[in-house]
Amino acid sequence: MKRRDVLQGAAVLGASTAIGLPHIWRKDANLARAANGEIKVGVLFSLTGTTAIIEESLHKATILAIEEINAAGGINGMQIVPVEEDPASDPATFAEKARKLVLGDRCVSVFGSYTSASRKAVLPVFEKRNNLYWYPTLYEGRECSKNVVYTGAVPNQQQDEFVPWLIQNFGTRFYLIGSNYIYPKEENNYCRKLLARYGAEVVNEEYVPLGHSEFSSVINKIRSTEPNVIFSTVVGDSVVALHRQYRAAGLDPEKMPMASLTTSENEIAAMGGDAAAGHFTSAPYFMVHQSPENERFVAAYRARWGDDKVTHFVSEPSYFQVYLFKQAVEKLAPSDISPPTVAEAVKGEELTAPQGQIRLERENLHCWLWPKIARARSDGQFEVLKDSAEWVAPVPYAAYPDQVCSENGLQQS
Ligand code: ACM
Image (cartoon, rainbow, N blue to C red):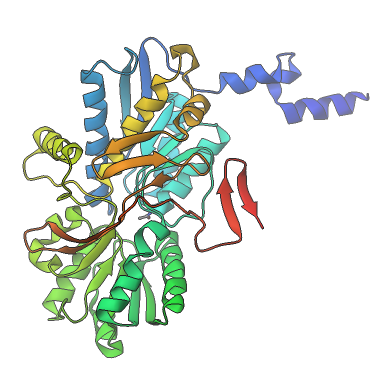
């Protein structure tokens, strides 16, 4: 072997190999581990900026679960230590804070993100360092990472029942309005496929910038196109502005409702119940859901954060995913707790969440969930009109039937 070949080989394997240390040592040294009776985890939700309106509640639900677990003795006697960062609703700041939590604080997992833009921004950090990100938000699917646990709904779990139900009850003309980034575009791509399947049509598809608050031209177009349903994937503060301006314009939810995948009790608390009343949301959880687990969750959340606070379909997975983490870590010896061992241990885990029994699908690390259709009431809560008879499997590539996410990665047929 020539000297140049040896040097090139060393460069590929990394500097530690070049000075004689085995490759396995270098890889292992990069992994975060539990130590000194503590399990460090990152908590990465925006407390400022345009999506703080919802992310603040995800932060609160995560902290509540951590505090409950610690108060009950921790995990196998070890306390969970949260390291909290505010990424300010900015994807670049998300990536910077994720690097700090993984490399600087050496957290064994990080709980975080509302928008898919922020999840996409942190993904390379978790994949490169073989760490684990726990993502509680409904999202567009089309992702297959062994470094993310996805506990929110994917499009088939929000739309498969909802879209035909809307067509049946209101008609075939849909106006698609979303914030301008990957999540609304992929949700609408799936919606278009369902509309075509049921003989319905799109009268307009439109995107507004994140944080957009002036909807008069959108409302004018809605008036002139006369849809039966306004299908909304607008997020953050814009949800509040859209609903208020719809109402101020004198539009009638009885005749032309908004059907949203992103409007929860949380945004309704910000806009006021009157602005939301009569509009529809599909999601696996609503605060009014009746179960002993939900009664406990709502009571604990309000006792910790205030009697005026609401729970919703993203704060609920933010809460139960910490318990999934606990179940996985419980199976491991303290010296074995690292991101890849936790990722392996959580596969196939089930628990009774506030929404019902959920399972983390081992093939794709997404959750089996309980979709529901509900109408907003003027008191800020929802009336559930339709509950799924069975839990629904996650199909993250539902819009791309030639692709399947499996334990061996993305399979293409
Ligand atoms: C989202 O961006 N996944 C709501």
